[in-house]
Image 1 (cartoon, rainbow, N blue to C red):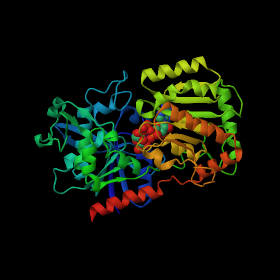
Image 2 (image 1 turned 180 degrees about the vertical axis):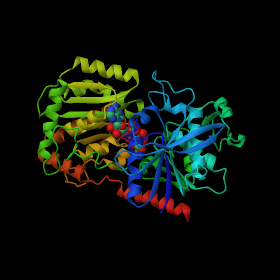
Image 3 (image 1 turned 120 degrees about the horizontal axis):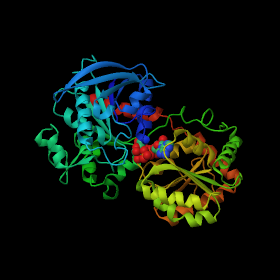
Image 4 (image 1 turned 45 degrees about the vertical axis):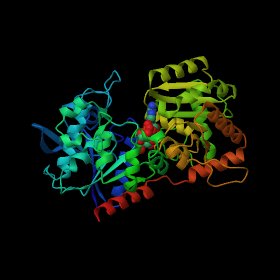
Length: 480
Ligand code: ADP
Ligand code: GLC
């Protein structure tokens, strides 16, 4: 049995800005199911502490940089997984997002807050927190946890470290001044360690020092070794090739289950697929769209940022509206995307609905109600929304990249296939996206074919069972 300290800056349902939170909730649970001893390490954000009204106790006090840092313990709601919370005022007395303030700009002290988080992880990993628990593996996720592997590398007797890249584009970059403010050994300022073209990169702490690197799909693992997707780190990724694996994310099959989802209007499964359309009609009515079950409804849920291909959606909008089909969008992000989408919705109220903000329940409704799900991401390490869509019989329209390429397959020719479950375009241009939408609409007009594609999508197993085993195999290999 492995003892795993799973360090993350987000975990659902306590705090979530994206897919990392979903993975940080469901992978540890899957590992627990496989008989492993897992504890999640999370910053004690104000909003997290507000949600945890009972069942939180202090389990340790650490001396870090001349201050006392309290470690609290609780359970991940709805599970048996232990969560350790690093309680410093830089996390616990601030409202808003884990990474940025209410005005949307990064917290001024992200380098020192996540440095202190890493120091706490280091002490817990070395069993210097009087928890009487010495992990065999420290599993870190994304740049916020990057310094943990670097700090642990300084100790000859230490647990093995695994670093998972959820998104290489967020490299955790800070100035040299920030490096100088932290109590890191000067030898770390080197291009083979934390230095990145004159800046400090927290991500490089994981990439240069972890014993093993994983990322969240096999295709993304290959892509980040190429300059187009490597964000300047492709050389390092090629160098680490022997200790780099792509393991596809799973999903929480209970949380995302159209058969008993409490957020949706009418539940359905493969046998009662005919009920799915009732969700669509109810959503059309609620959003003031033309109510007609025959109009194809396209859904989008996600961060409104360049990565997600919002440009492509905007650029082919006139053709899309002429098709005709309806579009329901939920998201938040860059103000120029928010404004452009809102304008289109205002001009086409019967056809386009745009909801800005973050709304977990509404995300479930869109997954259940849409016929097709748009995911024209420019790059996508794994992507979870296409997996949720598949489970809900909502066929994804995706750019062939990263985890989208690994999970969505389009039928080739007329031969029926039990693999085909969506629509895939090779080049991230508005024309290729629109052509894929046209193919999807043509298939939608053929009810027999459409139902087969939906059943293919819904039959696929995206549970964590297989992927959690792959992580376990890496942990075991590291300890041999
Ligand atoms: P990423 O992590 O790059 O944002 P993923 O597809 O892996 O992309 O995961 C996104 C997760 O965040 C999904 O669970 C999705 O439903 C959720 N999500 C994103 N934006 C919103 C939103 N505005 N409201 C509700 N859920 C959202
Ligand atoms: C990142 C990626 C996304 C992935 C998620 C969880 O946010 O952008 O593709 O699904 O992490 O691993």
